[in-house]
Image 1 (tube, helix red, strand yellow):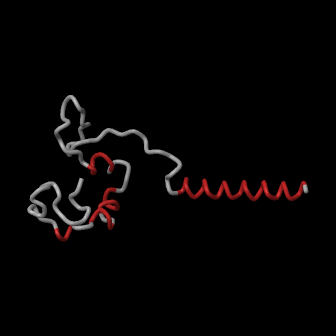
Image 2: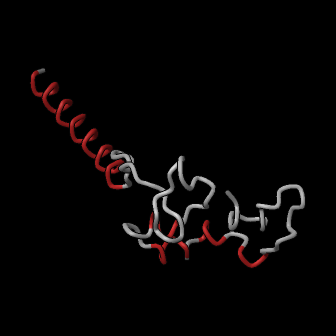
Image 3: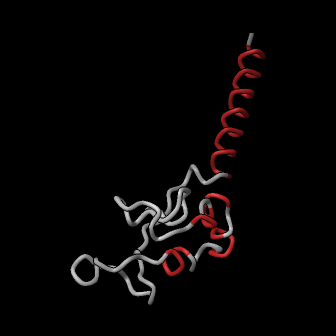
Length: 103
């Protein structure tokens, strides 16, 4: 009886470690640190000063993450070959049928 309890405990412990190991490997276990959004010049975007300026993913994310790898990804490039300034007249900020150019 004592051996069954011990083996069950060990199996449950190993299973929990595997699950947490998988989630930690994919980044689920740790949140992203707070960052400032930056404009194309690399300046912080502040509500009181320049909140009307668009943020730059290259300057905001590219300092820590591989920007060239991210921008070559499938989801990032969806719709790139169909880009048009007149794609959606009701929503002029949407420039393609894919994710490229969307907010």
